[in-house]
Image 1 (cartoon, rainbow, N blue to C red):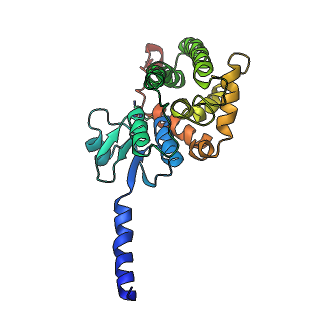
Image 2 (image 1 turned 120 degrees about the vertical axis):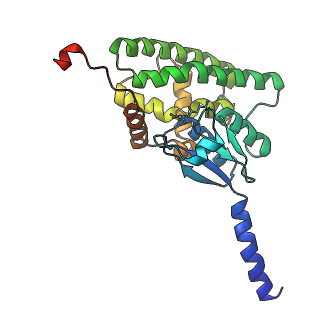
Length: 252
Ligand SMILES: N[C@@H](CCC(=O)N[C@@H](CS)C(=O)NCC(=O)O)C(=O)O
């Protein structure tokens, strides 16, 4: 090929491959965003990451997720936005079914995985969030007990899904490992900041082993945010709380 043709095709190909990249709109401390990063990395999908400011939401977020206005939003290479971490995980699994498949092949096993993910997101996540943000000591103690019960439920689920192997997904990381694993950084953060172990060896022996295996997985280690990022995220959430009502004695 003539050298000038090589240069022209190079100039055309590079911007085209850039155009075809997916974009992920996220917030570094979000466990839901961590899930998506996890899948993108496991499946070796290139993407451009855009950090969102949840205190001053961008036009991109407001137009791409107008109803819930939350991250993650994954933009298909044609620009189409996709929201909800679980739906995005499934989309990526369908897009690249041969690279690190996440969901089991049996349809009824897949349903059970989805139900556990839904249960985790609708029960455990709100407890975890409220645990961090409540200003009432008693409520925090109540939430601790609820999270302990949640960890027992997860331990049982782990025994059922892992079938004696290392991960929820069996020999390798699967869908549920990422659903729960997205929160591993927060679980560690609770231990350091609130002196509370969501997963405890005596109470959750198999889950505690799983936690160690997850932390020794290189993709997990590279996508789970640092302690500092979690602290920054928590401070952002606290900063958005309504001010405490001024009591009569304060005003006097
Ligand atoms: N169910 C959603 C939950 C996403 C979510 O709650 N994202 C939070 C960050 S962790 C968010 O963007 N919240 C918006 C806000 O706080 O204003 C998912 O799975 O993607």
